Length: 259
Image (cartoon, rainbow, N blue to C red):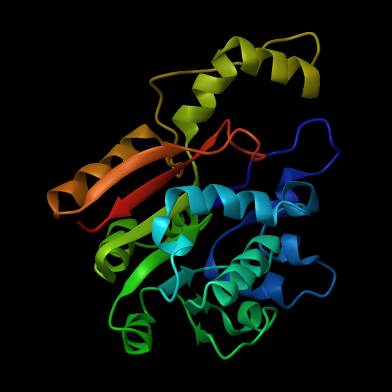
């Protein structure tokens, strides 16, 4: 089980945003008490009004999305402002957009002639995804890989997603929480100031390096993905998030490109 980063100084209980995986997201999608952002596992503070900002960061890393008439796949879009912004962008750019998520979550997203919705968890939905398009120019997996890591086979997930790319296509495994990145931030002067400002004005954060943290993605996992993809014939890079994104100090993106 993984947990979203806490929200120091807000009074929001991080436990309320703890999710186990696909089935838990299905239940959240059907819960009328939750906002669209909360159904996706985020407090409103982290997503409300930020969909365009996050999408701009994604567009800066995925050139095919800025072209016209591309085949686009979003695995696990959820229901926050981000998929709404992506849908508007794809319609405007005349892309064909395929969305893969639970039926409950997909039901929260608008329908359009340019959109194909596939209900189910990837990669179990792989045959339907391949039927929707022979290949994809842009594949987005945003704030999803940590749940695959916790409950399924991340290596198979990444292998099969990358295999769907057209030549020149890009796969962005985005908003990936990295425990090592978070530790480095908290050990820095900026991180200590953040801790004192939001958590405890009288203490510094306790940071333990070189210690395994079961269930969490760290540098070892990130660089293993890069190495695996490069050995498989893809270009692969780790990229920082734009500083204006709410969790940029502890999350990063992996970009995979088929030459």
